[in-house]
Image (cartoon, rainbow, N blue to C red):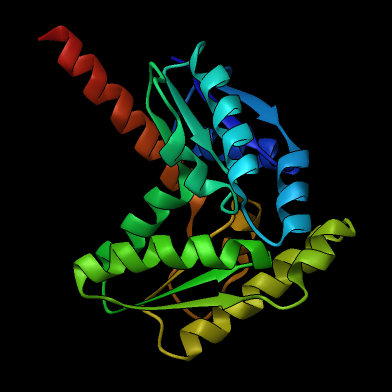
Length: 220
C-alpha cells in the first residue's frame, strides 16, 4: 500500500510520518512530494488562482499513477482536488476529512488558520460540513503565526497556535480544528480543552478508509 502526499513545506514530511506511526502504518507506506512553489505562487496572487489550481491538479494526477491514494496536505491549494481528472485512485484533501470529523463532534467548531490565503478555502469547506450537521462555526486567523513559521521559529509558531486554541476553548468552542498540517504539533501544547483535531491524522484515516472501500469493491 502506498499513500502519496503532496506538501508545500518540507517540514510536513515529518509531521505526516509521525501521524502514520500513530496510526500503526508501516515505514515506507507514505511517499512525499514537496512543492513550496505552489503555495508561494498562491501567496503572491492573494489566493488560489485557476492556473495554480491546474498546476496542482497535474501534480496530484502524476502522483496517483504510483499510489493507492493521494493526499493534498495544503489547505490553500485544497480546492484543486475538485478539478483532478481521470485519476485511477482517490485524491483527497486532508482538511476535508478534518472538517467532517470536527462537524461530527457538534455544538461549536473553531477552525484555526495560520496563513491568510487558507482562510477562504477553509471557511468554505468547514461551512459546508458544519451546515449539514447544524453546528456553529468560527474560523480564526492566528495573527503573526505564519511569519514565525517562515522565519524558522517552529517553537514560537506552535506556541502561538496553542495559545489561540486555548483562547477558542475559553470562548466556548466544543472542538478546535487545526486547519493546516504544519499546525499539528501545537495540539499537545493545548491546555484549556479537548486535544484539537489535526489534519494529518484525519487525512490519513480517510485515505485508509477509501483504499479499504476500493479493495472491497474489487473483491466482490
